[in-house]
Length: 118
Image (cartoon, rainbow, N blue to C red; front, side, top):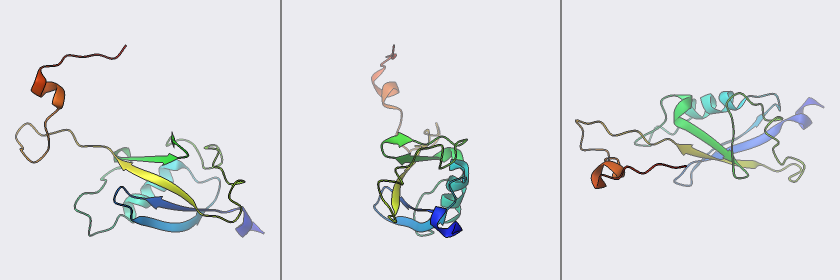
């Protein structure tokens, strides 16, 4: 049956609340999942993602790429027969506005650090 091929997912937000669970086809793209998260983002949250670029999806310690499908992302479906897979949702931090005191400033600018990663 087609229903048996579906993958059941829920999305865990940083505060511990969940979006879902819902069932998805293995052919569903990560980009589509992010769009679904944005559309179902809890209205009572102070801040939320505006675009798919504001959202990172993490499963089994790996950041999932927008252009991949669930099947290509190698979800551990076989390890959880009939189970719900929890993906973690991480929002990208907004860069501070030079004219706004609401967001934290970049720490490297406070200390004058000009470090680079090799």
